Image 1 (cartoon, rainbow, N blue to C red):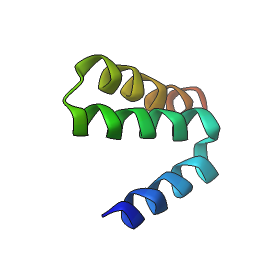
Image 2 (cartoon, one colour; image 1 turned 60 degrees about the vertical axis):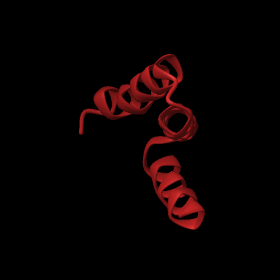
Image 3 (cartoon, helix red, strand yellow; image 1 turned 90 degrees about the horizontal axis):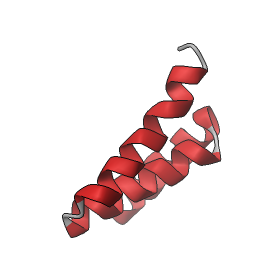
Image 4 (tube, rainbow, N blue to C red; image 1 turned 180 degrees about the vertical axis):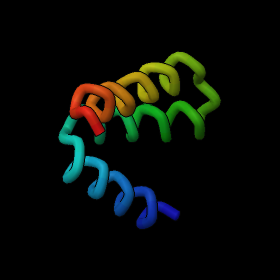
Length: 55
C-alpha cells in the first residue's frame, strides 16, 4: 500500500507541483490518523493547484 501511495504522490507532484504533493501527503496522514484538521488542510492544498491551473 505504501508503494501505491508513493506512486500516486509522484504523479500528483509531476502534474501539479510540490504544493499538491504536500497536500496529498497531509490528506493521507490526516485520514490515517483520523485528524480532520490535517485532512482538511491537505485537501485544500491538493485542490488549489488544480483549480488555479485551469484544468
